[in-house]
Image (cartoon, rainbow, N blue to C red; front, side, top):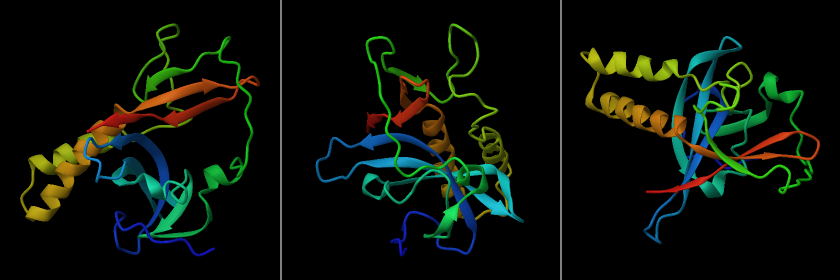
Length: 187
């Protein structure tokens, strides 16, 4: 299938996998379309890089930027990252009983108060929180970086902070599947 390019992704020849989503950002300005945060991890020698890069893209492109999809620069390639290829299903129907399992709002970095475990277990899915320290280290020793690289690192630090504080709506289906839906926030 021929997918349209995502202009907000880097225009290069690096393979990356869509690793996570953040909140939908809705503007008070009616002329600005909603955007959402997408984290990508580079694929180097058939392995995922330890660090993520976060981009803000239009919500209208959410249908092609799916979890586990692989991108070569701005273009999607066929298939899914191996971690997702075995479990990815195109059409899944969930049944919910909101009386016995009401929806809740959670953050990526939030712990479940009843268990002291993370709401989203880090062994199952992890934002690469080490990315923020990597960015801060590069910014502190910014000699050799040009103005555009410094600006990009600062943008990444902001986006990663927003990503880690993203609100998600957590639903539990009648067959005990957890469904996470990015919530919206205003800017």
